[in-house]
Length: 156
Image 1: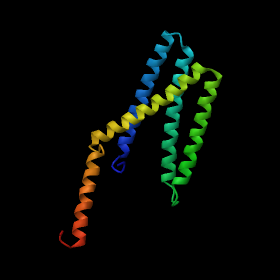
Image 2: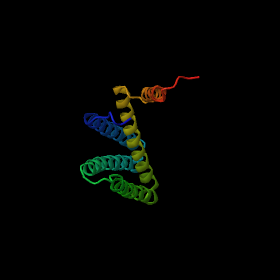
Image 3: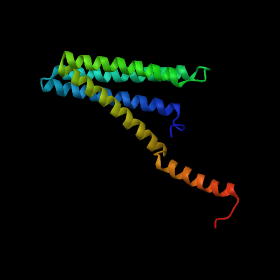
Image 4: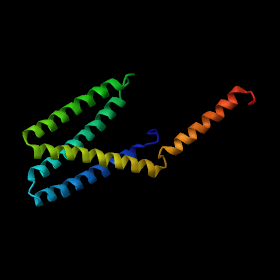
């Protein structure tokens, strides 16, 4: 499904995601300030910032590990991902214990960034015509046809 996802598409998705998340953060910060919830607005911006930094680190890690000659690319990528997610989780939960409003804003900011990323990836895939259903139907039809051709016997 992601094999047809080209590098320019990744750059476009990255730009749209960061722009959408930053726009949401600014609007959320203004709304929180208007509602006298400054810490929640600050947490929202921190959460979006953590999401953007995590996304950039993932891109850099995938590019660096993909350029290696090693056969095992999954282990270093998984180790980096687990370490990053652990650090972000500890930061978010720590801020939640420090100040509930601040921690709640961080959690909402992280969730909002992931939502915008998912939305932009799905939008890009559907725009390219790879929504998933056509690939499944096409491959299933191909495998049935090839099974009949390989056996060489007529159905009874």
